[in-house]
Length: 243
Image 1 (tube, rainbow, N blue to C red):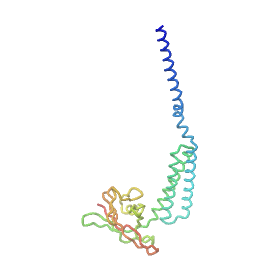
Image 2: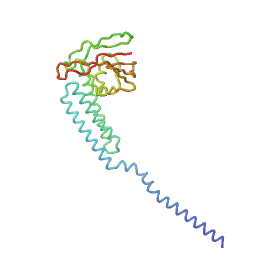
Image 3: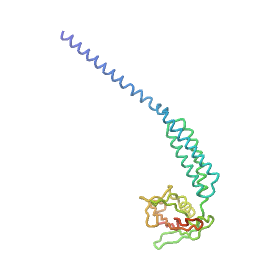
Image 4: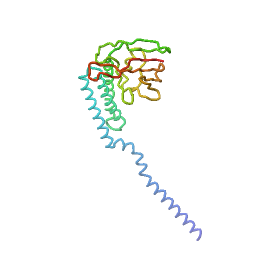
């Protein structure tokens, strides 16, 4: 009798364990189904598709604005505006590429197209920069400096290389500086801006760039006179020192 009772108890425990295992399997089944289909769900997420469509259309609109601006671009500032517009459109298309949607392939095609247009506009902006004459001198401490002496007045509105400087002393466009460096046979400064920080120190009117490829580079700024506009004074570059 005791033996039958023991067998009956074991049988009940086995049934209980089997029921618990089955319940756990049933409860975990939705999780496995979710994981198996998660990527597909995100790919077909209508909210993501709407976002991709919005960004793509915005990129095309910005690209159209750039194309329209090309038609009337003449001077350096006009071409720099075109470069900026193409850059904004490219940034939007790069965002579209990161969103799983039908727009990804179209965005990739447009990216290649817009980058060619931006490169062309950048070349035109650089060619529109005026040329200046520089004298090479040797400082008392032995450093080599290049000093602006007699600007070529091809562009009468720009008697000196302009420096666009924000309130925090950031030079927001290195195109002017790099154009001068190129004319002197020196490598360009990487990046779009020159900002105060670990590698850039500002001392009075001097920007000291410590991570320049050829050593320490100093950009000396002053105030240039533009007699053809109401706001006749602006920041400009007058000396470059290489240490």
